[in-house]
Image 1: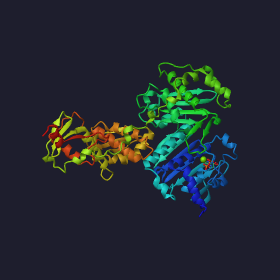
Image 2 (image 1 turned 180 degrees about the horizontal axis):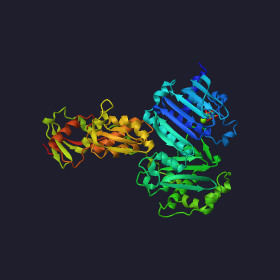
Image 3 (image 1 turned 120 degrees about the vertical axis):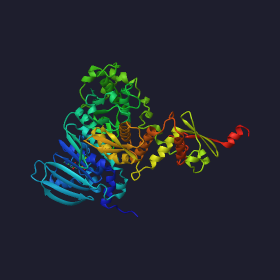
Image 4 (image 1 turned 45 degrees about the horizontal axis):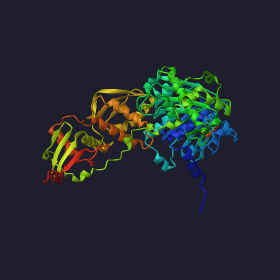
Length: 596
Ligand code: ADP
Ligand code: MG
C-alpha cells in the first residue's frame, strides 16, 4: 500500500541531507549572516550545539513577511530564475537551510530591518509556526535553534561526543572566518568566549585563529593570470606540523577539500619539510565560475575543475614562487613570466585561445613537465601511522601452553642481557622479552581503565603550564574527561592555557607536555569514531613512554612480578603492535633435539 508521507515527516527526511550534525547548522546560519551583509557575527553554542546554536548578526534583517516566510521549503530571496543559478555570488541559494532547521529543532527568530521601527519575533517547531509577535530588536537577525533533533531521536543518538561535535563546529567557524576576514566574528561555547576576531586582514585573521606563533612565519602567495588568481599564505617550512588540520583551500571564496591540490602544495614544499610534516596554507583560488562545477548540493565540499591539471600546476608554481621570493628555497627553478603577472584578472571569459596561450607560457611549461600529475602517491597522505588499525592481537598459539595460575613466590626466573627473562615452567622453558611483556601488561591495564576506574594519578609538585592556540585550547577543554580517566589532571587557567596538575603515577616526569601536545595533534585527525580512536592512540603512546626498556636491569622480584602480570593478561603472547612477547620451548622439543 502506498501512502503519502505527512509534511512534517517529509521535511525531517529532507532536512537530513542539509543538517547532519550541529556543525552543518552552524555553517548554514553563518553563511546566511554573511549573505545578509553583516559586519559583525556572533556564534553561541551550548553542549557542542546539541542544546543551543545561536547566530546573531547586524545584517540587513527581514521584514515581517519574510520573517515568517523564510522557514518555508524553497524560500529564498537569492534566486528567482534558473539563470540566476549561474550568476550566484552568495553562499546559499537553495532556500533549504532554514526549512531544514525548522524541521529538526525548536527555532526562535528575532529580526529587524533598518527601515522598520520594531522588530519581529517568530517561533517555529516541527515545521509549524508556534508564535509570531512584534518585538524590540536591534537591526539584524538572531536565529536560535534549540535541542537539535529533539523530534528525531535516531539522529540525536547518532551524534558523536561533545568533543567531536565541537571539533566540527570550530572547523566550520574557522572556514567562514577565514573566508571573510573583514567581518568581525566571535564564538562562545558554554558561556565561555573561545574566539573574538576583529575585522582585519587575512593575515591578521590567520594569526588570530591559528596562534601568534605564525605572526612572522607566513609567506604571501599571490599570482594573477587570465585564467585564475591565487592569493593567500603558506606557513614557513619550519612551522609545519606532524599532523594535518591547518590546510585550507577556498575556490571563489567557498571552502573546498582537495587531496589533488593539497598534493600540488606539498610538491612545492618538496625537500623543505621534515618527514611526515604538513605546512599551514590558506589559499584562495578565484576563477570564472564557468570553469568549475560546484556540486549543486551546497553541503558538498568537493569541486570539479574544467581543467584540473592547469589549476594544479598554477597552485604549485604560485607556492614555489612565494617560497623562492622569501629566499626560503635556495634557487629559482623557473622564470615567472612578467607578462603573466600583469594579465588582467579572470573577470573575462577564458577562451580556448587564452587557455592555450597560458599553457604555452614559460611559467606553465617549466613546472608541468617536471611535475606530472600522475606522480601523485596517495600513500603519502596517510593521516596516521599505518599500524593504527592493527586489530586486537590474537592470543599466541603458545598460549595453549600457559601454565595455570601461579604464585609469584613459586616461580624462578633468570635475567639475561638486561633484556630477557628466562622462565622455566612445567611445560618447558620461556624466553620472555621484558620490554614487549611490559608493553602488553600496560596496554591491558590502561584499556581496563575508565572514568569510574581511572588510572592512578600523581599530583605534580611543580605544575607545568600548557599554552595553546585558541582552537587547540577549545579542543583540549573537551578532552579533559577522557584524559582524566587516563590519569592526566588538567585545570584550565587563563584563556588558552592549562595547568597539568597530575599525571599517571608511573609516567616519567618532564614528559607530560609532550604527551598532551601529541595527543591533541593526533586528535585533530579523527573524524570517524573519535573517542575510541583517541583513547586507543592515547593508550598506545602512553605504553611506549612508560614501558621498561630493553637494557634496564631488573631485580629478581621485578622479573617475577612481570611474569605473573604477563600471565594474567588476556592476550599475553603479543605486544600491542603484534610482536611476540616470549618464545616457548617445549620440554618435548628439547628432549627431541638432545635425543633423550
Ligand atoms: P538560502 O540562504 O539558500 O536563500 P535559507 O533557508 O538559508 O536559504 O534562508 C532563506 C531566506 O531567509 C534567505 O534567502 C534570506 O532571504 C532570509 N534570511 C535567512 N537568514 C537571514 C539573515 N541572517 N538575515 C537576513 N535574511 C536572512
Ligand atoms: Mg542560506
